[in-house]
Length: 196
Image (cartoon, rainbow, N blue to C red; front, side):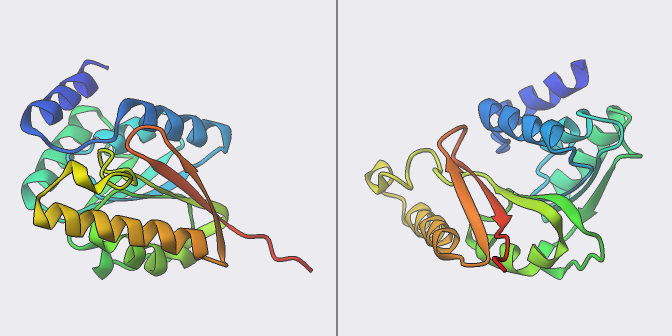
């Protein structure tokens, strides 16, 4: 368990974004309670959340995709240091370039914020019948609710993209989304049951 604390400390010291503790606890509980076995994660960073997911249960398998080569290499090292190479597969590249035949019990969207809608649309057919999308950073340090917290032009653009994604989820007729103000803002999107 010491390795995972070292990974977390490294992330905090080097400003690598990782999922906040209470958001992570929420997701880990979801994995346990819903018997989640196969997970797709978009945005590995250095592997912290993938490792935490895999540690829930030896039957959990995680596919995780990272765009940045340095973070990818660090993630592979961290996964191997935690002896989880059998459970976690780390892919390098743009998630939009990947195609999977698998059906995932959970797809965790935590990659580039501007691409959230594209990720959702691309991978929605890869959900198992009871599978869910879980999206992180929907509050973005409180800025989504209060844009005056930043005056940085690129951050403002990013926050507007997140707001657009939230609107997309709210208006989506195919999926029903519940929003939680935990961590940095988390949502859970499930396919609506077709009424006969």
